[in-house]
Image (cartoon, rainbow, N blue to C red; front, side, top):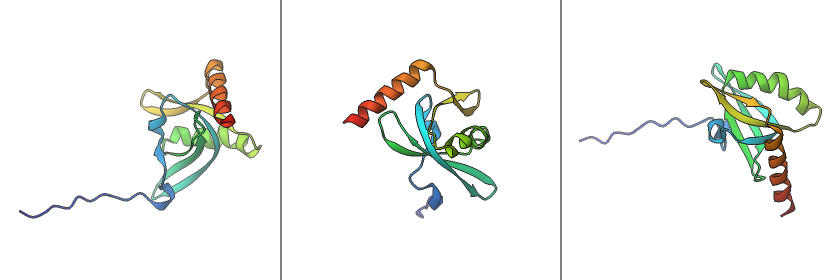
Length: 118
């Protein structure tokens, strides 16, 4: 019997080291930058973020809703030199960025400060 080779598409170089945004569902992250990569006819956002553990991550998303939120709501804040804290959530069948509650925001800040002091 012939050996069958399985084709595995390699991600483009711009997406190396990125993780799916679905891996961080219901988590709060600090966005400090993002870039939009165009692949064929799709736009993919690569988000540079920091988790509550102080870990720097690169997330990718092709959600049109999140791309719109990034361009229209988050980009103006980033241009002012601010960093934006968001909670990654899922509504029906799409992912979105939401404002974390006061308790979540305080918890996130406390954990981030604790990591920074170590």
